[in-house]
View (spheres, rainbow, N blue to C red):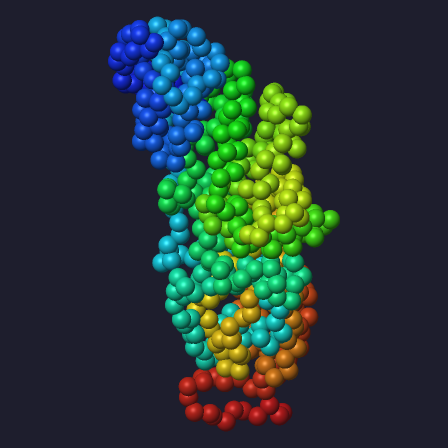
Length: 517
């Protein structure tokens, strides 16, 4: 704010046209009328990238009042310090000394470029690192078929190639699973009771999940929908008060009150509340869950994903500012007679939530919702990780090649994965280590007890099983002795004694002398 103030004052002092005027039979050099100042400054602000064409003539008059109060200008008799500037023919001039104060220059703004995932990129979520995977429950027969290569038999199989997922397919998956999750949390038979599903935009959901900064704030592709620069600067000023980057000290007494009024005026003139008219009933229905705080937070997370990205961004920045102001003990009172927290709720409730056909009850509902948002905004405006992981795994599954064995209906599309709770790293490691060992152990026992296999075939299969699954095999046969019990050695037959000796095995047999005496 300080930088914009100085820049505007410099341009105004340097380029405002000055000329001679007559007043009450007296001439005055190097001055201007109030109306001339309003005309010129209004055009300057409308063409400035810091303010833009939305600036009104009334706002320009308000700024010139501040100029008069802070001695940027003075009347033709040298009077200043009051905010009695009006859009009329009264004469004003610039004082000899500049009212500017030194401020540190703002460091160059560097935007973190977040790449939105392309549909031909490797699908998100295909990496299995740090993703808890529930093992697929299968009977021993199915495991035998799935792992037949490892134990020496390769039954005839064929690859089932999934049809290529289009962008529209992926968007529909995001929309349907998100709404399904919301319906489950709210405990409704149908979401049609609280919103029109046809108006839910799947592109909004995907953008709100992936196009975010390191702080989790949505990044807009269309910069024309951004907050005006002067509003964003004002919000940063109050959120970081008194340590904002471009302001070392207040410009004048009550400066922070004027900055707050500027922000409140902008949000108060929005054409539609940030939570939109369409989603009013959905957000109000969540208010019934406030006694179950965790469930309410999850429901608000999903509802906020349905917002247009520009609304979600404005809401994120506003809630962060409101929460910081309420916690800032160095912030002077922004309004006489109201506590800071009460002021925040009363000022911004209506621009956050209201119905298209306003009723008296709206203000009470909005105040209750905004109070809960302020207390839990960091959690509520996060992307729900469980939902994101489930959808990414679903999309990855539909893109994988499947294998079908004879008699096994493996090419049937699996039902959508159910939503599960987040588990600890220790539980994940335990599931990964032991979750698939039970069916493998059952398969090993089946090989051991198969009476149709000869000893040679059984030894071959067990050897191959040991090579593929050494941990499972070691669990079953911890010592060589336990393995030897499976194949007991047969007693070797003693060789018969030779009754005679061949003199030359390659010559014909010859009669020998009798041994009888």
